[in-house]
Length: 587
Ligand SMILES: Nc1ncnc2c1ncn2[C@@H]1O[C@H](COP(=O)(O)OP(=O)(O)O)[C@@H](O)[C@H]1O
Ligand SMILES: [Mg+2]
Image (cartoon, rainbow, N blue to C red; front, side, top):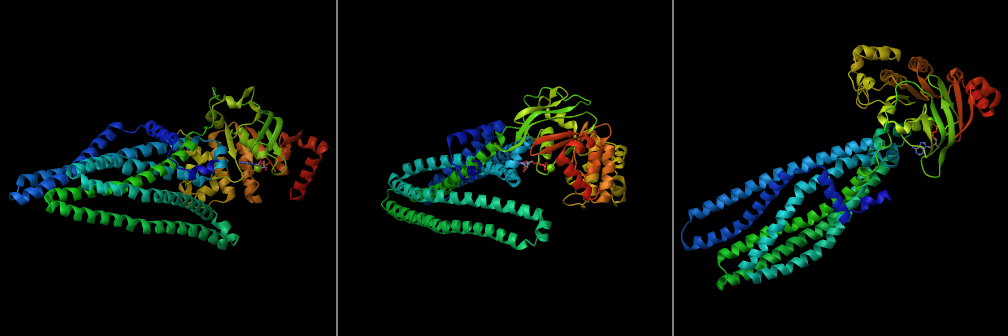
């Protein structure tokens, strides 16, 4: 359902209402907007007066000789129009930029508050484009179109009135051309709009594909998949090309047609006007005024068409923004309490959970994680171990049952206070762009002393490799910096967790992808981290499991056993099998 929003973009009442609400709630600077409107109307009126004065000037010029006053007046008018339109343009740009900046900030805040399931459903390139492109459409509408539309409307209405006053017969001839013009323009405009929407979608698809391929370039090269990616890029680009040519085809008919209509109109006016002038019904100056006014109208008319298509674009963008802005944020409304300091047991009570309705991942799972002990979670891949962690972190909410900290449900705690208690080290520890120091202190708001950082790095067994780097803690990592090895990244993550001092530690196969050297180091670092903490470890090595105080066996979303290693070896057949396999693979 959500995909179809892009294709819409109809200017419906509800969308317009939502759009206006959006503008209002983003605190559009009203006074500046008002001044801008007034100024642009001033500009429009002077724009109308100039042709009249010019006409009179010509008539007088023929009669008396040179009229210096008239010239001066004309010059002042020109100046007034220029200053008014310049100022109003600047003010509008201010309003537009100000508004889009506020909308963007609001959107960014909202995106950060969106729950994890949102990001499961929407591609990240899509969400990025909401914050950058869609907001830009709104800005363009305000700065380039909205007020221009008002002043254009005034210009056209005023000009038509003056034209009637000057010569109603000639004006009627022109007005006949208007519906003809609209009859041609409207259907073509609709077609153009459809093309531009498809082009937009195609462009988004291309950029999503590029992001993916460029981001995973190593995989592409290692799999010899360049040809394949080349082809899928070519396909996207070719269809962009086809849309571009469709647009060109329409334009190649439309543009000459438009100028033809204009030329014909002009010829008719000048021809017929000449007759009227020679018969004395119209003065030469009036004819000049007439033609100048006609030019004044042409431009606004062509702008009406672009205004409408921009409006449609913004409506489509608004619908997409609405999807995000009205999405339920990570709910905090039931949370009244701060998570308490200190340690308590964490308990799952009949927790049921599904990512998608009908596909139950955990069904009525109950178990306890004793405070300050080590609990190992074992089970085949896909059995729901990581899901258990996600639920503890409240990335998702269980659909049945509850998770408790001592006697209190964790969903009653504010998200921030609960997550502050948690430390999470995953298999593939991600780093943010920045220095190693930035990465170690990431998430700590209060300033951290160098000694504290060094101590954390020492306990994380990261000190050695960091100090061996030429720039030490100031070494850039991530996209543009050096690449750290898996074990090094892991130890940076452990140092970060040490600084956070979490009460509850979640380790998701933290040493699974490491070679035995770095595994050894990381394991020592983890042992430092686990001291005096409630630890849950998704385990795959027998050594970790044997040392755990409690082992929970998870299979197909159900607990099939729990106890110590000895207990499980005695009475849990699939655990025995698992342990045997681990033993054979080198432990
Ligand atoms: N974000 C998600 N959206 C939908 N399904 C998911 C998501 N994450 C995991 N799953 C599914 O949930 C099941 C359990 O996954 P997971 O908890 O990661 O298992 P484990 O960590 O034990 O290997 C798997 O079948 C997996 O496909
Ligand atoms: Mg997992």
